[in-house]
Image (cartoon, rainbow, N blue to C red; front, side):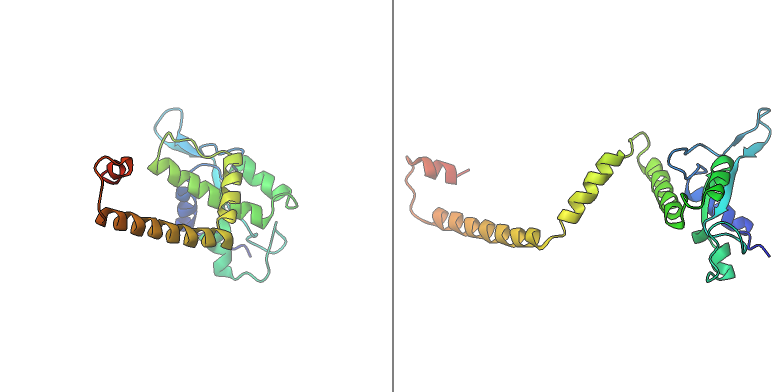
Length: 178
């Protein structure tokens, strides 16, 4: 018995990625008007990340029927990419398909809020990830604490200087008035 997606789930999966194939090397639109412009053609499919039935690609026997039919087990693909991911399960792993879905959802959101702004390149994303990782080190926290102490001390010194007697001809007095 197959645990197919309910129609509402299929729609949610497709809308979540703006009806574009989630494969980042494809990303083609999967819905549009027919040639006569009196109907719609859909070439997208809600593909199961973990198969809908035993023996299918990436089947997970521990998964419940509801989880198998749920939105989190789906990825929106064009029909070509849908066939491709099921034909080569060694290359197209559960983790890869989940990443495709997440990235496609982020891309669709970015296109909504900032149309025309190019997505960060793969290299920029890699560098950003390295920076984010580096920023988590305690050395940064120690630096932030030291910076705050120096900043507070400099502020206290400046306040004390401003309260003291001033010489109008002194270059530092002119600086202190700034």
